[in-house]
Length: 327
Ligand SMILES: [Zn+2]
Image (cartoon, rainbow, N blue to C red; front, side):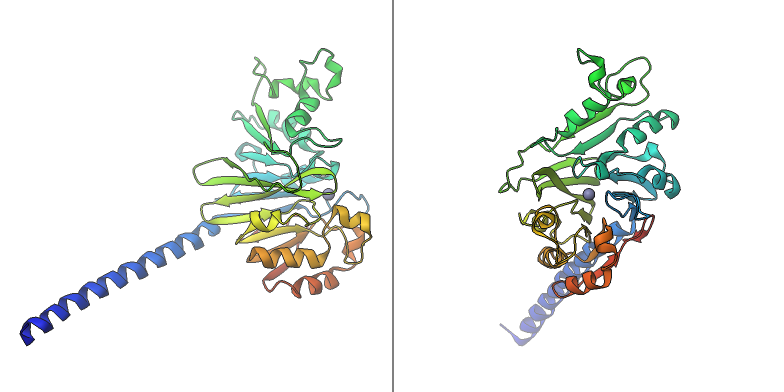
């Protein structure tokens, strides 16, 4: 090869390499921007940062996910949730789904409040209610909704609010329908099956079973494009499933219902701070929000954060009712 031809070939190849590297670099930047941008569309608002107590000044468990400034998903509906939804300025007609972590009162009792409110908001589109499967003394979410509203039992009085049955069955008086679905797998401790539901092209939710004593319970992950927020619900952290579900989440909301020195029964139901830190670290979540405070943890918040930070190096936030986290 002549010198001229050699340098010409080198010149062409160099240009090709530069073009190739530029394409890869620009492609990566676009992917990064897309990831960044999708979280800019999403906000997390805490509607209830408390547990079941009524002397703590806090609403019980409830969270609202805003997408493009619309109240899109409600997670849990504990006592006080609906008043704070009202204060949040959310429009009930924008809600695509209500996700329940489990059916304890402090997570589910205000579901009928939202359903009845829908009559006055002139909602017309159906509303998904998704929650755990049956187990122990608890019905499935589907059976729970029927027990609230169904008037087609032989004895009408077997449901609590049969006058709202037109939200379950299409009738002339129906304004909008509820579609209730339960986690489709059983609640065996070793199971780690993930239930995925698509709400829109860009918005989907995932659930996995977690151990909350013997109560059927699930953790939720909400994904808007590349942006994700995970919710522990109440759980003791022993299954390893929350780490799996929340892997690389932008945000994790974890329930701080018991202190580190809690007794055996309390720890059978709930995770202590060190476990929260371990899970956040293993899942590599970027931000951690603590919630579901109780009198036994409210007074120990600084100790809780310290214990968590021994295991987890990301940002830790202590939530308050109505607080908004800009993602
Ligand atoms: Zn609870």
